Image (cartoon, rainbow, N blue to C red; front, top):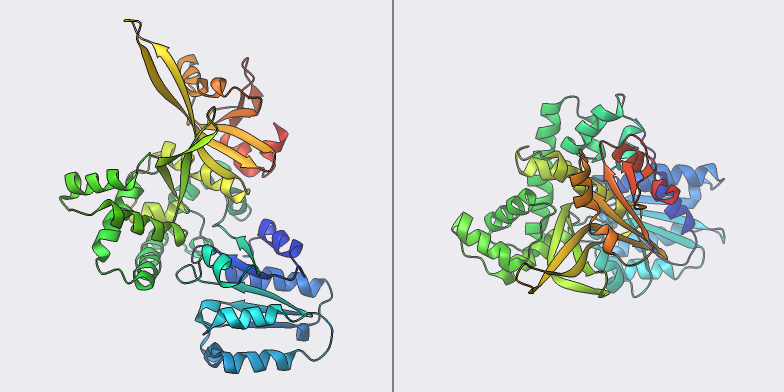
Length: 418
């Protein structure tokens, strides 16, 4: 079963021969190696690149263990470059290579070498691209399967596909598991033995239980506003444990750096400024989030909001939580300050969209509630509500687009059509 990842393949193709090290980052098991060694390599071959001008090494393979030493790898690579034609060097799990920064910088200086690498999120984080390669790195962030990618190989209806996708997520290897019980076992094992172990090992965390408790709290509250101090208070009141806000912030940063979770910062739309705290956290893969909670708390409203957030990130948007401050007068004539929220403020270049996630709009009251903040943005950017019960994309009398969830997710250009 081959799953096309055309978005990422096209990104790599567009970065060919740009003089930079192409660095494919993303959470473990999301398809980085497959993208590089299968999809991209096959593309090169289809374009007439000869096999002896493609050098590929997977450092996690036992037979390639000697190549983890720079004094073995570098002479080997130089020996492969036998003429002035362009060579493509593809390196997988490059964090296993000792002193990899110096090796990659040396390769990048060769005029006829184009370098592509992947790295484990445990030791090779996106921020390292900035610091380690001194401006020579060009990151391609890869995510688990989008719903459209998932449905490209799913044999059932989109409704059945949605139910499975929001339950088990979009990690490609989950699709190979033959039944729900094995999917659950796979996700639980992956979370415990790979993701958590990676974070604990990288950061020398002594109290693993604290990290796991924090994951449980965040998993239970996806899309809720919070901050380290509030999380610390939750530990005291619910878990009867004392953990400082500083320690919690470190743990949250580790989880974000590992691509397990992502944060959405609040943005004051009229004031045109960011509000540092509190923030919202979303899981990069819903299957892992559900596995963390033993597949309890499966409210579709929260799953839907998280998946919409991920889809917007996959499409390359910067996503914030919108805040609109307004002042009302109470019955005593006193001014009351209120904050209204827009789920997602999405920016990419000159494009901006305001988006609300609403599972259903059963009546005018619910519609009024969802569109209230959208009507107060004070600008002319496009506004929309994504819901499961809309029959087809349509504008209401206030100029707000009501779009069906499936129409949004299955067409990567759906926002451009509105």
